Image (cartoon, rainbow, N blue to C red; front, side, top):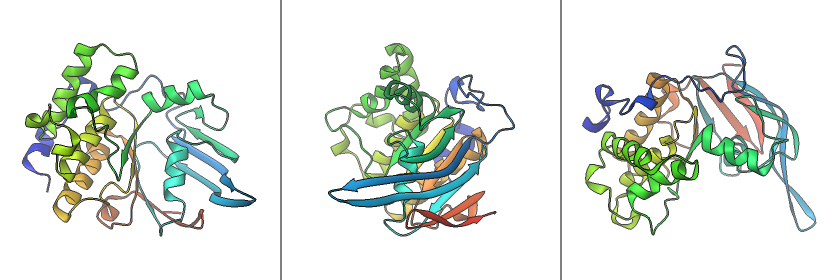
Length: 257
């Protein structure tokens, strides 16, 4: 069950967090949100080639909750990095929300990351010299939103996540669960259609792991956001609409097929 500060009655903390109808989704409503065809990412290390993602083809519909499973080195994080526009494919095609990520320019990828996706990382990736409020507000300020609007949104998100008393704290003054909730607020500040979570419970205890997974599930179920979680944990398995298992960079199983 969600903790008191995350119960469904308190969801949708501000108007921009309703059911998604994003104008910047460059696609028809009946098209898959994510389309990959023979998608590969190959890294060159000295004279050797290391395959991170190996000829993956898949379709993911809008509103899915996808769980990526596999051992360390299976390609989960590499695939998320490609979907996030943090890296680009070596071969193949990748379309996300109508954006061609294989052919995108650096400027286009920057806009895509600011508008389409929100990332949640295992190591939180909070800037240590910024306060909680500043960490959450930063992506929206970089996207050109006005400070009063951003501050209002950030405060409401933090309040919804039970962090009202932490606005002026530095990350070093937070618990692991508080840092990950701050990271989720930061991922949501630009109202993305897609949430990508890379081992979001990897550095958390059992109690906080359940809280984080329930938050991600609620974002999917109540708001229609597409959520993709790369994880070793089984906590999200029963909520998944799609489960994909990777090995050596390739898909070895997908449920449903």
